[in-house]
Image 1 (tube, rainbow, N blue to C red):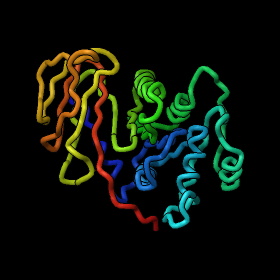
Image 2 (cartoon, rainbow, N blue to C red):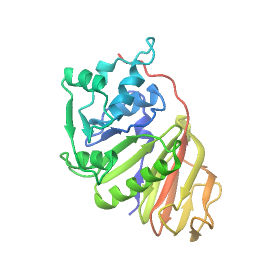
Image 3 (cartoon, rainbow, N blue to C red):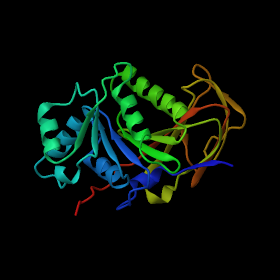
Image 4 (spheres, rainbow, N blue to C red):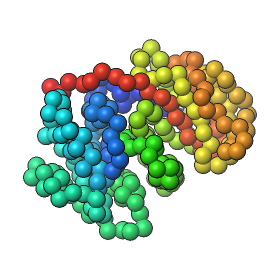
Length: 258
């Protein structure tokens, strides 16, 4: 049976928090307040990974005309080794009852610490973990983030990780059969997608793309399906080993918080 993915659920207007879902805000530039607002509304647990709390507060405070009130966006937890958390940010959030917890482990990154915290939450099945971050800065950090996403899914099979970066939604398809729902009629995504074997060689079969393939060998340095296009309301992928599925999202209208 194919595993189903519905990435656009996290971009629905006025959506309801999905049970067992979490938003992890990394210490990286936040693409937009609008994206933050969508992802916040669609998740029921919110964690800032160390300096991610700085990013959150700065994003909401940067413009006096913003409709986003920082008090409407209080995270459940700020967690990490806390070496990046500014004193003024910690004081602000602690004043409003936000939990600040420290993990001194120097053999894991703040992302890894965040995943450990999220994985310990009560769960009754697959946990969707939405990651607000970027791979457009330093190349080593971008590759490191993708590496850690892969490692965490191997360690914690009940987690499903979604990376929302500047204009992309990216997630990992494990070995097997998958169906990704891509309703173009909603106007939330462009046709542009890629299936990238960054975790090792694979053989893939696709259906629903402009350039579908069958039992197609793909590997870095060889053949890679990038700059492909969605032509249907869903894309079916069968892969022999893990691949990164990435799609481009459109900009959307600003949410007005009421």
